[in-house]
Length: 236
Image (cartoon, rainbow, N blue to C red):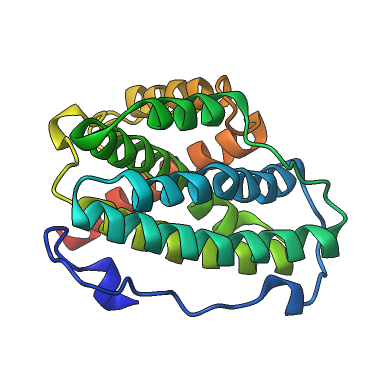
């Protein structure tokens, strides 16, 4: 896994690495289930409902051979991750959707209408943006959930997300200049926190996560900034 997390995006590899699977359904289901936990399991399911078909389209329509390889890897890995989400939901009695949400359906339609190099760019940009936005939510759920099944699924999801980011970046089609800037929470904790909240609320308005998950992200960010400040002061 370390090789995946620290690999240079431009490095190409024929076979995509598959994270080691820890089956959430095999875990002890002890611990309460929060609304944020439920939203997270549903979000993992939704990710598979649009990224599996987008990966299939990349295999069939991708102009670049690398895009075809990345599409195949993401498709296969999301099939595996989707199975883990379905197992976890069954154990926790969570109702899962069987269709992607409206935004995801629109992205799939956009890919279906594109051809050649335009398809490659849309495929990479849409999936790269989606994976970038899910990272703070996955991390927060992993750190805060009190349910063993959700914790195992969050850890597994994080491994897949990091792998997929590296795969997408290996196509050399990511527009880094167009990525949103992260709020500078350490330089200005108040402004940084407000910017993070605004970004999270915007995602929630387009099929994202409820406010519980958003506030959890804020708490983690503030605590991390405070801890870093204390370490700096003590080192002087």
